[in-house]
Amino acid sequence: MTQSIGQKFTPFTLLKFALPSMLMMMLMSCYTIVDGIFISRFLGDSALSAVNIVYPVVSILLAIGIMLATGGSAIVAKKMGEGKNAEARSDFSMFAAAGVLASILLAVLTLLFLTPVCRVLGATDALLANCRSYLGTVILFAPACMLQSLFQSFFVTAGKPKIGMTLIISAGVTNAILDYVFLAQLGFGVEGAALATGIGQMIPAVVGVCYFFFIKGDLYFTRFQFHGKTLLLASGNGASEMVTNLSNAIITYAFNQILLRLVGESGIAAITIILYAEFLFNALYLGFSMGVAPVISYQYGAKNDGELQKICRICRRFVLFSAIIITICSYFLSEPVVYLFVGSKNETYQLAVEGFSLFCLAFLFSGFNIFSSALFTALSDGKTSAVISFARTFVFILLSLMALPPILGVTGVWLAIPVAEFITLFLSAFYQWRKRTIYHYA
Image: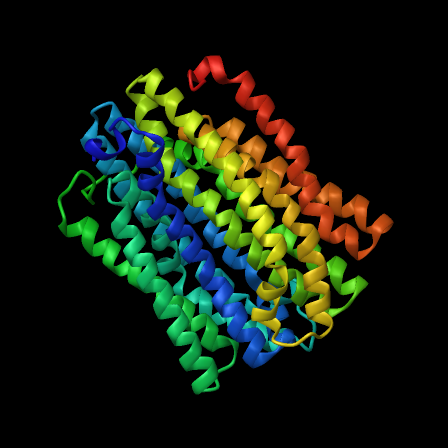
């Protein structure tokens, strides 16, 4: 493992090392996107709206998984950089066990209170049946979803990012094929899309468990003792990533309620399509940050200040140039992207195209903000990371949603996230400048 994340990196080799994680995250985002395309095409806007309404529960599950994955991998990578390999393996095993137990608990609670949960999230009488069907099916695969989230980070920490990428590709292809079979051929309802997603998640979960049990590389499952302090440290360190997903759940709910009031169910379908596109493009930055985070943690733990500074410079340049390219591409691809979901130029299509042409401005700033949060997580400064993440994904978006729609109407809804990302840019730059002498990354 140390030959991978401990090597001296050039811009090319660092991007090559992070590429599998970038592809993994983008392919994982395609789970939801592919489901959305098939649901919209074969079941209609109402079914797509129902899936979006209950998605906050999935966001909570992902929040816990990503928290343990990012916070835990930073701890594990740092200990391996310090030469504490046995402790690193023990901690890794504990994080995996804790994640599985948390996912089972969430699944049980959701199934016990399925209808009340759907109602609280905003399900109307017309949408309740689809909400129950999708959530009740997808939550059955909660442990697989959790393990997939954990393994995508820890395969990178183990120096095996290509294995994780291969598993995610396999899962994504399986998900797409089963979506076609269940929805287009067999005529299943929304539960078919949920089933396809869950079966896809089983592939990296099952193979990952077998790998870390039986392949005795640098990182594998061992007997462990529960250390609450270490678990809390990982949770605190990864809190920013958890905050991001929990905030996404709340913000999705806020978007749904505002658009339902302004333009009805077609507005929920439109914002669902736009948020799918956001998942995909931001997944590039999330994957890049996930790929370089263990490298940053390792160099920080090994006190290699020169190498740490070089890596951070490469990361900032990548984020800057890719942000410009992604924003331009997303603007010109807005119509074909929306058409993939809708298939006809109806009201939902018009709303989504109009919204996406404004929404894509967010990509100019989101990459730097995502990397800034991940940087401080990798440096075990969970507090700073959480402040950036919470401000970015909750505070500034909520303030924008409160201020802009009363003035600009639906246009204000589309601009809420770009405005929030722009404001967060200044906060991210402030913390990177202020902390540079503490962690020696610049």
